[in-house]
Image (cartoon, rainbow, N blue to C red; front, side, top):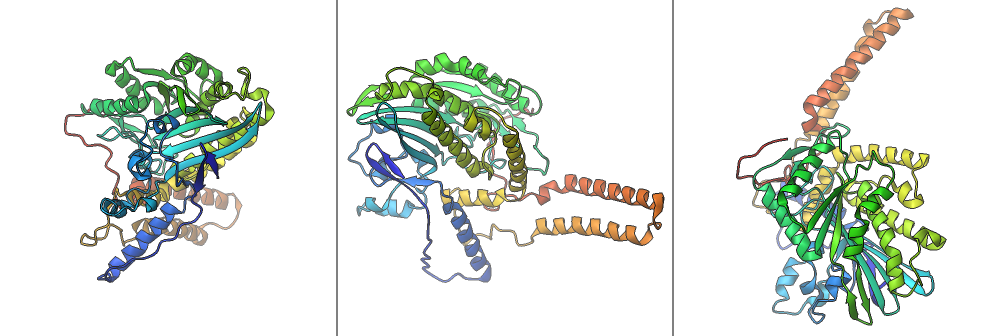
Length: 506
């Protein structure tokens, strides 16, 4: 793909699974399970979003990398949060304690990497890396919020790197689900209503999350992008309240209603002084000149579309400062003043949005017309509508399988042939859908047999019949939504929270 700090970076383009069977499976059910596990493993590995290097620890930002012991093997100094193949390599890692197998243990990240060369005052390498956290990994509606250990869903670290000769400037941002106990399970509705649970221990989970954020990155600037009205405000109000109760001066909270305020520069103005204060990491001739003192932690409901627009806005503001630092610009100028740089920046950040969205929601990102062109367009809105429909189908009927693949590759579910099969054999969902089709077909046949011939009466009868059938199907779907949704099999309805104390439900 290219180089980072003179180290070659690779993307995984193809994977092959070689069976290594120590003994025959005991029965047909185990053979069927084995086929299902292999299919899930293929699904998990065939995502063209894995990246690695034989010589560079791609799991770390430049700031963390500058502090590492470079003599230790890659896997020993890797950041476990982003070490996606660690569970798959677990046996080899254990064996490597007595026999050095470090050459065979290469950490991979899941996310996005784009490395580009552009000529300004000097030749510059512009790189964007997004690292997806392995903890609380999963799909859009199956994994939301926080767990008892402070891990949040869709947690991603994004690093914008500018390199010129022996000078490097790195700017880091993070995103992650709102760190509360909340859920939004699929139920066939267009947008399921979120539920927030506020146990006493939610405060401890919140504190654990931000304790790690501060340890890893420094001061935290929360940018909450969800709506101030409607169902989303339920989660937003709880987030605002929890931050206020935390009373931590190292965590600043700001919010911006993305759908009401279309002037996105207002958002930048709200955090510009914080971004200036936190700065970016700068290094010249392997000497650290200054470090980044904290990060902006952005979120919306999915931490996808609105979040990516916001992060690209902040990154655009910082980029000229990075370019001046490495000597590629004489003075700070807006990115859009250089047509080639502006186009490159928009393309890279739009691609980042699509890759990150595909991994979590199953489709490309929404609102990428703004990231790519700087404004909303009719075609962009049409594309958003198409993606939204596809998301609805995937999130309701196929995300269970995608969740299973994540759980399998990360070891959230461990295969044990001594236990009953985790896969259902009854095919209930298909049976229920067939019931709906049969029900509708029966009424249509009934109408054609008993309807009066022609005229207004016939038309009214058919309209009434269709209306009745539609209402019947709608009611059936509402009552049986939980049976029709494609739930994960390997972890039934992911354990969202671990509550040991009294709760209140919003």
